[in-house]
Length: 376
Image (cartoon, rainbow, N blue to C red; front, side, top):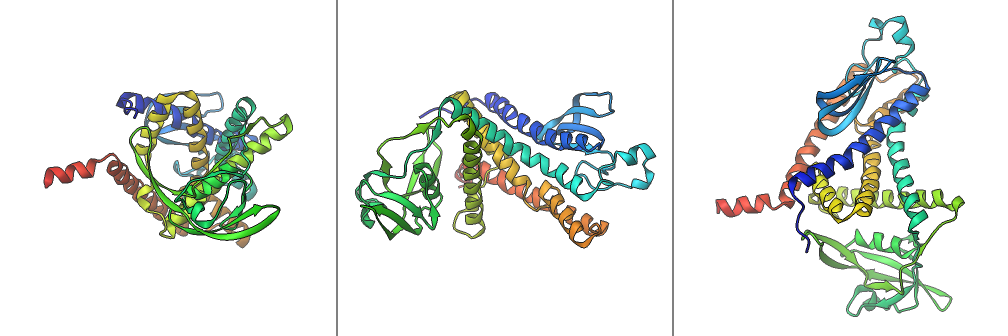
């Protein structure tokens, strides 16, 4: 079992992981805005008091804030860093021509959408680089061995069977099978197999396994009890490289969607939600194991950052996209009062989620258990 890296190492790893992701996200907003001729007052990595910065020839202030938990681009016409609309009547003629909020809906929509898309593109680029050098995981979903006393063994799965689908989801690789099973401990799912050119569907109750990783952290996972004959990694051709990386990114995004839905439906504990403290811990752990693991983590975090920002929560990019969609349908902006209440509600949700995940993180570190022993 590996020891936990020191705190200073975790802090540096966290900044090195999150900083580039925030920069890529905000740069997506900035570049598309600049393409449409929208001006930016400031481009900040981090929130709070500025600790370093400079102003370019276009008048944009590029800066670094002391709190490295995100970032923003404040466009001309924005009232605040959340891109709430300011009073356009007070803008000069020159600023009105460069104001974000006076642009057509489709331009505002694309500017906002560009942030999350940039995060997905970064993940695709990282996976494409891995696939070009190491190869893409493409292990056929053919059973090499079945563990005795496992769920698969009890259901009659045999070596040589090809897994066609599970839970109604078509399976193309063993990696897809593992991702599906991992999130469903104890669930009963239909498993379609192919044996001797014939297909059959059987019901399988997945096992429950409690794993302890190399840093001593425990987590529950679903277990089918089958292994492949051997792992297969193939290097895609130049034409297949980007589609393969995009498909892999989508598979991870779909797994994230699955996990979120399981939490919302009560099948998975919300205690598994992690916040910035957990991200920092994992970043330090992965960085301590080597650059490949750390870069892989950056790709996963980039996907999650893009996904979270697409959620229709006011103050997030998805909330803005929702307002623009409503505006496009009703041919007029959402009222300022409705937007104000929505942003207040969105801020409350984000703060509550931040507090909840922080409590979860501290609990996963054993803080509440130790406090309980001290009190008891």
